[in-house]
Image 1 (tube, rainbow, N blue to C red):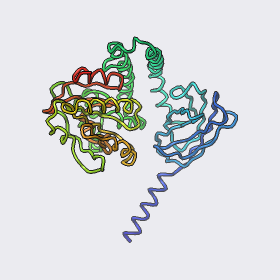
Image 2: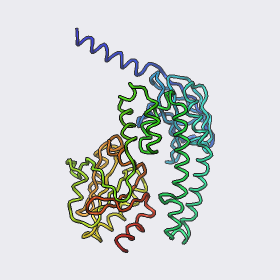
Image 3: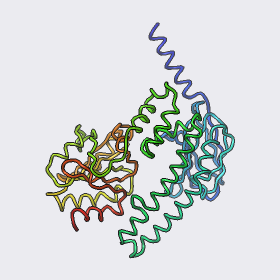
Length: 371
């Protein structure tokens, strides 16, 4: 009887997980008929179709509980996307190519409107960011861009780009707190455990019910409310990692080599700036092998993808794998959410300096090690 009951429960859960069907009609202008339109759940396509005369219809089994999905369009190897917050509904999407990702119009959904409101609030900042991106691209073609002060102004820790990101996240923080009981807000919470400060984390935690506080996300926000970004003089936080052979070890192993400096690089295999910085890190690790131990702690979707990068490891530059790092307590404790982020420690494990991005990476290393 117990086995039958268990099977019945599993069957019921499966039926509930796919309790309905979503039907999407998309009218898309500006694309050619070679464009392929995908509906994606997580990282898995659940429906796709080639665009025909600017129109496509997608149908897929989905849960009756609203969730986040992506409309992903590929045209001539160029991706375009927008995010949806929908359930088993019949909806219509109307957009021009230039509307992606934030100005796409979605009608017919009783759930997506809340996401659309946040998009609308953030739109002016997205436009400023796009204009800044174009300005930086133009500057990069000039000699002026070689000036470290210019790079710091635009892409430094407190540069114009960072300020716009801060503005964008502040709008999101206010939106979360003002709409806390909406289901969409709970899809945002897992991505915001390193984006703000203790005040926000405490405010979120205090809005939770006693039951919600006992959930995994509740416990993460409690930890976040007790964490802060490292400042000069703070000790490193240990991280469980896997070496190039996928054997377990710890970040602390690399502070036992009696080098003057230990550079911890928090990077991602899919981040272009991380990949741009890797050769610079290797060059300095090789050139100053007696003074510098470098450790690139990589976020990766899987061990197989990581191992292609792990093979780059040298004696003085360890490229290690932090499995599911963004879900760990250490990730929250570090309060770093940009890749690549570089943390330079002395041999006792005390922070000397930190910076983000590939553009100023070489200048920062030269500041401490020389050219």
